[in-house]
Image 1: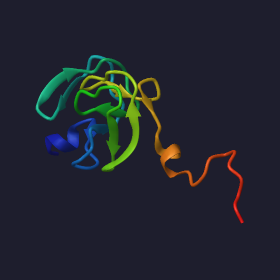
Image 2 (image 1 turned 135 degrees about the horizontal axis):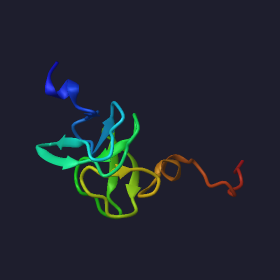
Image 3 (image 1 turned 90 degrees about the horizontal axis):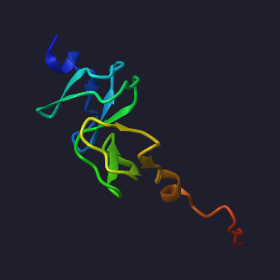
Image 4 (image 1 turned 90 degrees about the vertical axis):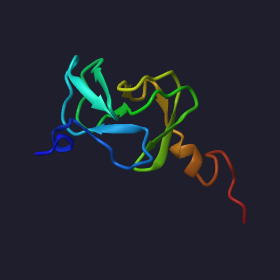
Length: 105
């Protein structure tokens, strides 16, 4: 098994600025993120995201190489990227018309 296969984190696309958890990460567990060693700042469950780089308010979150939202609070490398520090821009970007807009004939 290579070190990439044994890592609890997986990079889904080269452009991503977050990593996905492939197994539960326990608080204090040592993580290697792009050559930087950090201790996990909390328990993170499978499928959740950790910052691959430091992110600031307004920075776009990329997963699978596409934007999935933007950061609302400063988030350091290795921190959990979740609803408490990210807003989803997906619905606003992809909605064809606002909820109250009338249909034109």
